[in-house]
Length: 239
Image 1: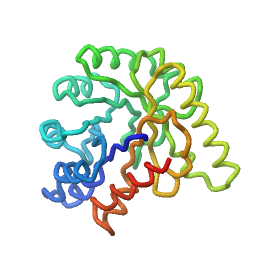
Image 2: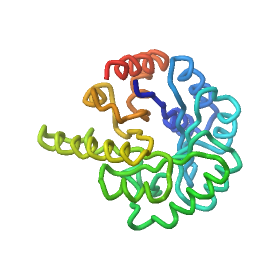
Image 3: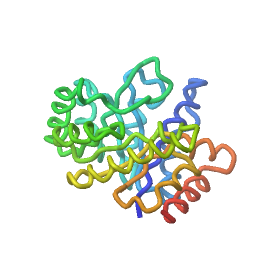
Image 4: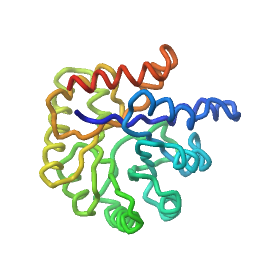
């Protein structure tokens, strides 16, 4: 059964909307773990729009499962990760004007910088995942950086309007996951996944873990965080 890592960024987004100290993503992370999640994900953005350094440091001390730190492949962020030592770093693209991560890292353009970041992080004994679009060339390039994992971007599939478009997008995800697995990369998947779209992954055994945030936090507003996480885990168990 694939694992579930829950992104708690939007807990911090709500907190930062009022610039106060509630709700606390550190407390949310504890609830997520108690509900059965296999890991906690946070994205420490360079503009600190939601998750703050304080959050990551406290999470490092309190998370009992696995702390996954998403970040840009910059020297400043790499230095922060080396100091804090999350269980996994996921390298992602980052633009200040975007609402959320819009796609995978362009490894044709940034391969050298990413390779350097991978090397420094692994030297510090931090496994590295690279967030990539479902594209065979990018899977091969990720493999050449010596990364430990890839996280396949599922956003285009989740946003597809027509069945034809959705089928074409999913085929790319399947082919990318199979190639990554063949290359002995760990295979994660995330971005845009929800309680309906995750069902499409039934039988795709190459996926090791799903990284899901927005849909779980949005549901938690209505039914509570514990229940929202447990309901997603129940769906993943059926895959």
